[in-house]
Length: 444
Image (cartoon, rainbow, N blue to C red; front, side):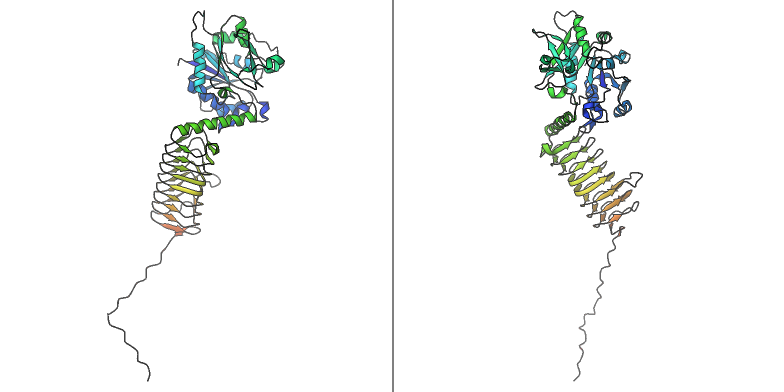
C-alpha cells in the first residue's frame, strides 16, 4: 500500500469509566487500548503515527514506550477538532492521506484501516478531484452515545450531528459515526481553522470539518464498516468487558484454526502475542498471558497459568494449579500438580513433583533455578534460587534445598535443609568351611 500517516487521539480522561486512570490505558485482554489501536495502525502501514496526549500524558507516553511515535500534547482539552489542529506541524511529514481515529477502539483490524484508505484513494469516474475526506459509518439498533449521520432524502451525506446537539428526531437515526476518518491533509487543516465552538459543550468538534468541506463543494465519502464490532469505541466498564470478550473470542478462534485443541473455549483466557503448536491440548480454566510460546503435542491445564516469558517445548505437560513464569521447560517435561516455577530453566524429561516451588525472589532480586535433563523433584520440594539440580538428580519429599547448594548429577538429597542421602552399606556374608557345625552334647 502507498504511504499514509495517522493521528491517534488519546488525550481524554474518559469520565464514564469512573476511573482515575486515562480511558485509553484500561486493558483489553492484557494490553492497554491505546497500544492495540496503535498496533492496528502500524500493521496497516501508517507512518508516521502522531499520538495526541493530554490527561496523564506521561502515563500514555509510557504505554507506547519504545514505539516510533510522534507525541503532541493537548494541554487544554478544547475538543477533537482542536486536538487534530495541534498536529498540523507534525503532519507535514505525512506522505499521502491522513487517518484520524480514537485510542479507545481496541478491536479495529489493520484490514479495516487498509480498506478505509483504499476507498479514500479510489478514483471515481467523472470526479474533478479526489475525495477530501472519507469516513466509516455503522448502523446500530441502539445508537446511544454516537454522532448521527445526516443524509438528504436522496442519500448523499450532509453532515454529522453529535448526540448532545441532536434533535429528538435525529437521535432516532441508526446510522452513526464511530470516529474513523481518512483526510486529504491539504483540505483538512484549512477546514479545522474554520471550526467554531458553537455547541452545548463549547468545544471544537472534528465532525464539523465534514460539514465545512461539504459546504465548500468538496467530495466527502461515507462507507459502511465491514464489521460493526471492530469500530465501536469503549466508553464504559460494560463496553470494556464486551471488548475484552470479543478480542478473547478472536484469539481463541485463531488458535483453533491453527490446529490447537481448546476443550472449552468459553472457559479459556489467551492473550494476544501467544504462539501454540499444533496438536497441543488446552484444558478449561487456563490463563495464558502474552509472550508465551508453547510447542507441539503439549498439554496445559486445567486451572493453570502461564505468564509472560514462559516457553514449553514439544511434549511438555502443565497440569492443574500450576503457575509458570519466565521459565523454559524442555521436551516431555511434566509439572502436573500444585507447582510454581519462576525464572527456571528445566531440561527434558524432568518430573516436577506435586507442590514443588522454585523460590526465585530473595526480597531484593530474582534468581534462576536450573534443573537438568532427567532430574526429579519429590512432592513439596522447595528449591531456593540460585541453585542447580544436576542431570538425573533427585530430591526427597519435603526437601528444602538452600541457595547455592547445588545437587550433583545423579545424587539424591533429602530433609531440611537438604543433605545427601547416604545409603547404609550392604550386609557382608561370611564364608563357611563347608563342614557341619559340631553338635553339643547334653548332660547325662
